[in-house]
Length: 160
Image 1: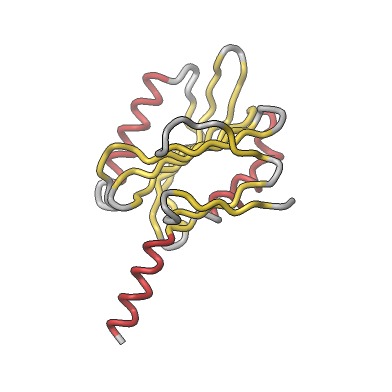
Image 2: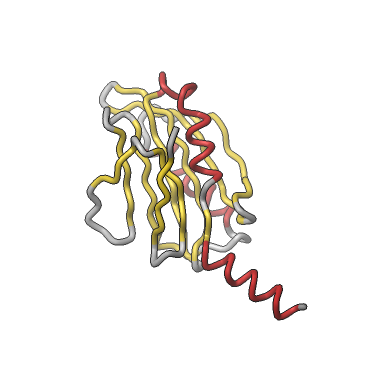
């Protein structure tokens, strides 16, 4: 499978998306969306309004979990963890939901970019989760916070 690289938010975030999942219309500059041709797989990246640091990540993830539990129809949490992606800590909630009779598998990632929330959601039909799991893992593993990498390199040069 071929992937296409996208740079978002002033070249600060990089992500690889399968080439058969195309950008879809987004009316806000803080949001980026992709949709598969069959409209059964959706990827959405947005910058949230809340301040977020690694220290308050657990609290914010817990707030999202409670909100999903309250607001998402037929919410069932499958997995909730903290994971490191490109030396950055993200919170992850995997859950199933049902909307208008369709059953979805959802991956929700919460991380920090420039002190604000970076929210990444990936969704597919629940019965397609097994075939999409490795693709979703590749997308998640591809996330790069580029400006932070540059800061880390400068810190290393100044320390040496």
